[in-house]
Image 1 (cartoon, helix red, strand yellow):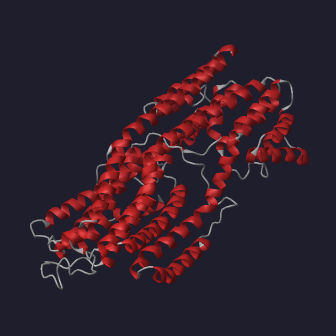
Image 2 (tube, helix red, strand yellow):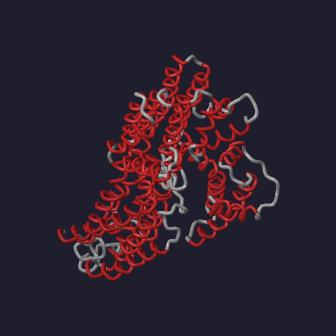
Image 3 (tube, one colour):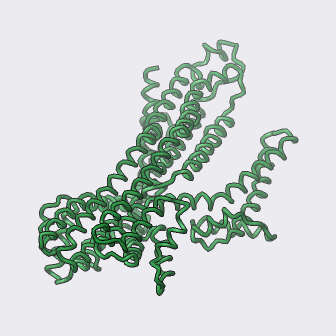
Amino acid sequence: MQFWVGWCRFLARGYPWPVDVSDELDRATTFLESDLAPETVTRAGYTAAGLGAVVAAAAASVLGVTPATVPLVALAAGLVLAHVVHSTPCWLASLRQSAALGDAPDLVGRAVLRMHVEPTAESAAAFAAESDDGPLAASLGQHVRGAAGTPESGLGSFVAAWRDTFPALRRALNLVVAAADAPAGERSRTLDRAMTAVLRGTRDRLASFTATVQGPVTGIYAFGVLLPLALVAVLPAARVAGLPVTIGALVVTYDGLLPAMLLVASAWLFTRRPVAFPPPAVSRAHPDVPSRPWRALAAGALSLGLAVLGVPLLAPGWLTPLVAPALGVGVALSVWYRPVAAVRDHAKAVESNLVDALYLVGRRVAEGEAVEAALDHAAGEVSGETGDVLAAACRRQRQLRVGVREAFLGEHGALARVPSPRARSTAALLALAAAEGAPAGRAIVSMADHLDDLQALERECQHDLARVTGTLRSTATTFGPLVAGATVAMADGMGLGGGAVGALGGPGGGSMTAPPLATPDLGLAVGAYVLLLSVVLTVLATGLQHGLDRTLVGVRVGRALPTAALVYAGAFLAAGAMV
């Protein structure tokens, strides 16, 4: 985001005249909470359009485009660049909004859980805002602070701001507010209806998106992957038959236009994803995450060097410029993002058995046992890292003589290094329940029910989307490179890639009108397309299923790039041995 802001400010200097700003752009920059004025973005788009038109006109002239077509090429390039610059804030705002709405069930859940323990709308709103640092919680926090000193809780103004974006959130929070004034016997049913409303609304929106996205994803797969790979088989023969297929046209089409079209289609799909469930945010400030990239760079450089030395010993030398960079970049990305992924995996493991822990604690508290003693008992019965966290919190309670909150959330608490808003909010509510005693037991059991519903919703939604994105992932790493490598090998073996061409013409044949594409040229052009395809499809599949999370994308691209390169090289060698 900062890189984008810097470039916009730099380009905006080239257009100092007054500009008109669209309402959509104004709303997008406001939602992104950026200090970049919409006027700056508009001026930057006009400057980019002018520069792009000049560059496109020069490139068209060099490539021999007819003089009458050069102005059209320049105009098209300028309009496209202006639209890209002006649309980028709206695209980023859409991604941020989908991630924000993915937090809606958790936000409502935190408010509901607090209402079970302390039935006031003010405390519920404040707790829901303080227990997370996502954009939705930040927005609620602004409304809570704005309502300070007034009879309002902030939930009403927050609902008004988001009601058009996510009607289910409005219904759920209105029920939370109503539960504050409901009789004790009705309160639990009202809160259950609030959770049902937000869960059903989220599930329905994602189900609708999953149904509608299958057509565009199938189109991307057919015209961006299957058809280009099928055409690879006929490209060498087409040149032999006299069609004007040059290596320059092949590179421009396969390594330029096709990846660009896939990127545009992917961006269009991302903006239509209504809800995303991104993993917990982990910054480089976390003590278990290195802040300097030297290890990643060293690992990438070592992999690159080994590939440069080893690939020519096992395969044709033209594969080295494909395999070596792919291995180097893939290993560097994997090493750089692996610590962040490990912290996230630990956080998800801690969350995995929270439901069981809450059931055990709630049942014992309802029977009159203290929360501290119930936690100690649950630590021995709950398995996995959730049980380890409970055991660590109980040890801190005994050794430091602190309460439940400090044992979990203190400076050296059991959750101090676990970036899980869900686990931290659960611990905060357990601390509140410790002051309530036996009456809080039913509330803790209700926490378990709601948390179970939230986890089931995430699993169901991601499972549905996985059926759509699974083909994209397998194509990016296996199917696409396999078909492309085998096709290039067959073209070479049949004499269409610069090998024995006498049977089709040339030396000894006399009927060939143009020399075939050399195998290194064809292989490099198609291989570069395969590697770009592995990156674009991996980003698309990850973004559709989980949202565009930088760490998750980095980890998966780090795996996909080396896999695609090795499969492509292996398919070429294996098919070449059989042809």
